[in-house]
Length: 522
Image (cartoon, rainbow, N blue to C red; front, side, top):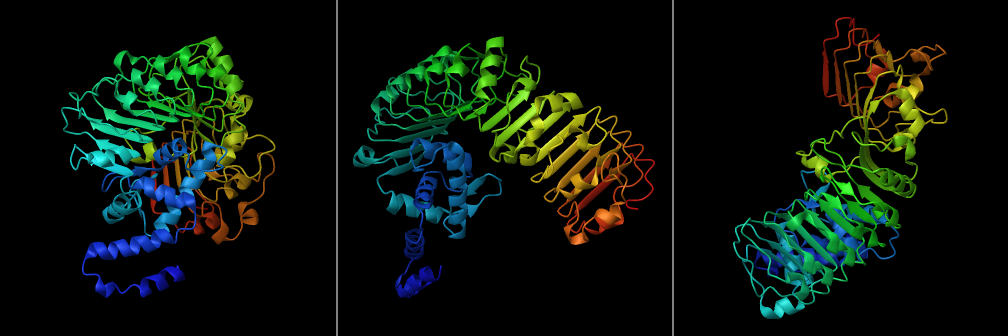
């Protein structure tokens, strides 16, 4: 940073008589002092998006993977970590700015102008509603194109970018149609993204895009909902067909031997041909959350194939709800990224920008104690950030933990406990002391609950909490900001005094319908 400041001092900014010149100098120096190739590549890719756009980090990962930006990355998970690190570095360098939406980032319009006008000049084009259409010479050299189509009634007939490696088209109205054989003109494409296209897309000509590594379809309609042609894209590694009303995953998809990521989010009442999952030998990440409580319809062979596939997955989003697939037949041990529900649909608010763009490791368990222990999903507790428990025969949270689990819930930030009929105490002391990151706790409709933290160190041994608790500054719930308790008729106390003294960050406390409550602490 000191070298960067010295470099600025060597430039006589007083000689620059306009803001654009000053901005160019500052951005050019900042860019030159970026040390990592990843940082430079992500910065340039961000320049493709529109002014004041909330750029999804996950899109950067999937596009970047298709463009082969992450040299020597062995997995998408590694690419995701490197993207997050690059974004943090770019924010510190003032080349990107934070977004109000968690999981997104923004680029200032001056930084974007610097990218498009200098670093990627003639290589990237960001076009809004056919305005500032590139010259023919630019079309012949341009490698990345983003086209925002809102308001366009006709697609340009001369749309021709023979050397394009990335094409993103978004916000197309119902009257907008792509020309016949559209993709045949761009055989070098590695990344294609269609986002919110209202007119049904006829994408059969995609089979000519033999270099395609990432296909990203989000909130689009497809002609006949037929995706069999995708089986010809043998180099495809990332396939997202989220919220596209796909009704059948045909056997042709099983030909995609290199596929690493498959995103079927929002594909309601989806049927999967037998053999598809079995043939996806290299799949690392699988996202299958439905919507409207209409989950995927599995056959018995589907279940057997998914059981084998789960043994190597590192990312899974899935609802064990209203289908025949049983969680006890799955393996969860290798998962690093997950959103999973048992006995209910995933409690993900689709209208929430945070839930759409920011992926918290989430478990939503509406079941009984034995089911949790039998399927061993509790191996994920130490990686879980958001947890909803509705376990009817649980007396302590410790009841659903395995005997070998010690530092469980070490990453937990949000906990919601409801409708646990036999719950008397939420935490034993060791479990409570492990909740170092917990920020939000909601407890509702637990009629037998007497206190949040038991006075015992375990179910059997009674030891007073004052003798066990560490000093207040290191106490359990030290990061708790929100506490809501309701409809717990037997609740008499919330916390002991040592725990209450450690609640330095508490911002919101709500207690309602708890008639037996004597005091908040004792």
